[in-house]
Amino acid sequence: MSLSKLRLDYFTLNRTTHYVHVKTKDERIKLINLLIKKGYSFTQTSWADYESCIETRFPLSIDTKNKTIGHMGNVTCAACAATSRVILTIDDFLNHYFNNTKIY
Image 1 (tube, rainbow, N blue to C red):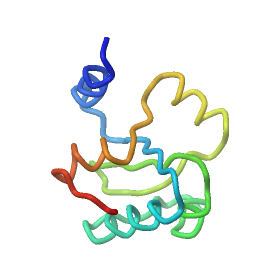
Image 2: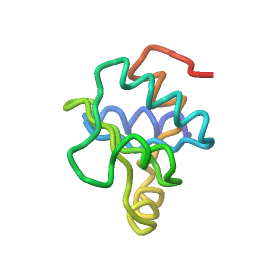
Image 3: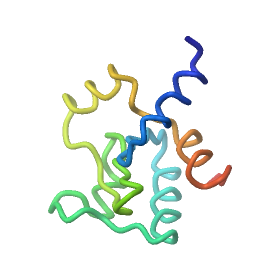
Image 4: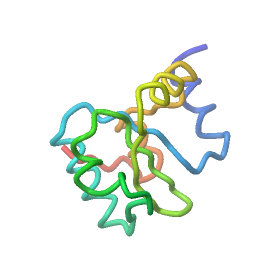
């Protein structure tokens, strides 16, 4: 199965929470600021605030239904998501939800 077919299948599962891998701190800041401009806010958990979402190396957790931003909390969670192939690249996420928006 091709990677593009796999990604298409991912989006057809009607997921509302997406895990997005962001490579650099600069990209992470730009993505979070874009989401805030689009009306997203941070989850109500005490550890998922603006600064922790920027400083963490774990994938961001973005809920497109409730418009919330958070991040994975530990290596085990991130490893399970990677093994299950549910972590998206920033470009895949932006292309699907924001019509080819670029943050670069």
